[in-house]
Length: 292
Image (cartoon, rainbow, N blue to C red; front, side, top):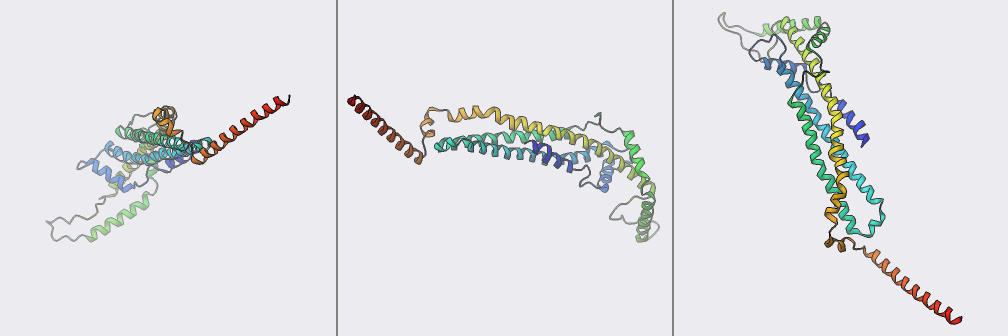
């Protein structure tokens, strides 16, 4: 179970990056959708919350799988415990009922564990706490975006100018009083707008990474605790009560203590042999007394 928490689950969680399945184009589209028809002066918080929630939701699957792996491990431990008590093989009905009761208990604890893990994710999705002490400030995010802005600007500007030229050459205007048709894919109209869009994208990416890392650490810490409390400790604290509740009933005693047929025959043969030996001892004692 410790290996599941610290190796399997931790590695799976770290493999999820804040920008998996999230391109710069999707980020820019989210920013434009958040501003709607109004030109934005600053990066909107709505776009940040929408995108970061989308990425946080991806932590749910490995978290739930962690509880399922622990569930499988508990079932394996229960099976090993049965093998450590060979005397139970003498009472197959009792062994079967013990096994069923244990498996049902472990299975019954799994669903509340999954529900708690889902609630941990939903809690993080319900409120994006931008005042978290480890969350990067807006000024630092803007400074980080500016430090990246100088990389690749010149080549991108040339590419943008070429795309604009191709777009303008493809437009055929029928008359001075008519508007050109709307292109199927909207593009930035000038380099200044492109730079502004890229700057906003960098700021959003910086904010997403900062907050996603915070939530990732919280989930990495909280999920094992939830699994231990609801599943592992829940089973350990309830197993004795469940066995007494389902097995310790007078009407079940005769059936539960019914021996396996082979063991019953062996016991009866031994009882007959003991009886014969006891008679022999008595006879020998009588003979000894007569001889005296």
